[in-house]
Length: 77
Length: 372
Image (tube, rainbow over all chains, first blue to last red; front, side, top):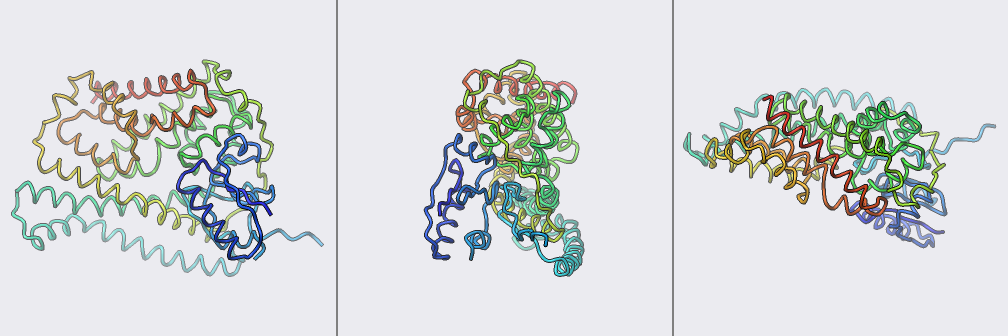
């Protein structure tokens, strides 16, 4: 599974990335977490509010920091 | 059998706001009603307590200053301390209440929805609508660039997009609450009205100048199709949670600014003589308005930090127009933001943007110095 965390690099984006990594470790799934800070790529993914989380190409959340609970649910736990 | 809807809102259209840390998505109906009833009861109770506390702040501040701390009446120190002890809780109480209310209102708006409303709107009307939506749409300044691309890609005209981007950070609930709490409703209304006017007119002018070719090419080629049409509706309990999350998040983050700002303001209140600033920031010094705008560009602060200082400046003889121009410039024209915008805009368009907004702010400054 590939998880993309989209954000230009503000505190909220870093927080999101941290939470995603924690959730992945907690869920015990094997996933690659990538940080995307390129605006062009964000636009291609259809995201225009950051921070956003994209899992295997599907936009799960945009414009807010997700909770650990939400992340775990998206990871299927 | 009909396919079941997923419980969690998974789409781009999820009710997200970057000011809100998060809220539980949705609760089952019956549970929701129970939660809501309890919330409403608790809410009424809290509101009464809030009002009572708010009413007694002046007395409490006097009591703390002269009885508890035993300061002598009429000294500089006592003036400053009383001012600080009265204004800090007052502003924080107001802020908590309004941020909660705005948090609930914002749960009805998402950037996706706003974009859908604005796409294909004619100019003029679009500019007015965009500036107004800028108040209620959840927005954080680090989202400015992706939002810009998303709006243009969906067919929102350039000028209308700018109206939104100018209004969203400048006319926000924190600025209006602080102005109301520290300077009264008239100044708050003037700030809000002129801020909206600057956003509308500046966006309209930028639209009329036909500057689309000064947007980076790759931005114009992007046509976003993902719209998140079926935005899952939040329940009322969910909206209350969104309001509470906004209070935790925003008040939790801005209170040090407010306290620091009021402390500086209190110092000025107690120690700087009346009329001290009249010569350099008063009505007669016409050059103080452009100077205030220029000074505001490299400064970057949020409304929470700047308003208490603004209050202190006003009290010591600075003119309202000059001070408003300074505040708008600090919030709306910031160097870091322009550097970020350079990724999607060519230098020429950034200069036009800064020039048009700056001119609008200047006009506001001169206008209020002239009529008040």
